Image (cartoon, rainbow, N blue to C red):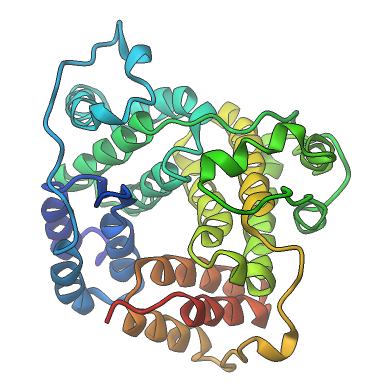
Length: 354
């Protein structure tokens, strides 16, 4: 915990806060703050300076302000990607005026319907910094990172595809396996998600998940969803190696944010991220599983987690680093070797930048 609250993470956050949350003509997401939180928390702080230096070269500057966002007109700016700079100023001011937990609770409820923002990168970025805050790293750099994360989520807010709440009897793994695929798995996220309302079985599949009867059941249900998605990546990650990592990392971000949220938000958070995970799975996971012979064999023994994490750091891709962190958690929680195999699968499918 000391490392998480130390100067390495703070310095990296400050460097990234001069950059925007997206970069390039294709508006790719800036994963820098998320990846460095993993590196520091996982005891790889000595890798941060070199990794950040290389990653910064690809990023764009923070977008300029256009107009103030106020408590009276914020709804008009929600989902307007041109106003990322305005949202960053708004949340920076709000977090100076009120405790971070209070701001997070208010805006989590407002932003939850748009949790697809940035293909879930908004909630993932928030989840990573909340982990640092809950670990004791409450300082201007981490508070600033929370402002940047909430701003990205607000500016890129996108509604979850319509579906009713969970009302069935299936475990997360069985429910995810039952999700039908869209007929045309081509094109961008909007085009793929646009097929879901007409997809036979879509709403029934989302409703098939067993609901959490009480808030106390939400963490277990979310943890099981993270496990299901991680193991699902091993079988289906070849369909879209980058997008499909978010079926695991997004619910994991929600899981680790729960302790900072009012309990009345726990069940709605589970429902929103389950529907989103199911939508990504439907839109990108191929119906056919990869043959077992094509899958990697994970290391075993007491050093297995460390070895897989070392491989992810050496690989250096931001998605591989974040997904390996989640997969390592799943392995630690369940002992399932396929969780570590999934991390190696991601490293094999996603090209290393180095």
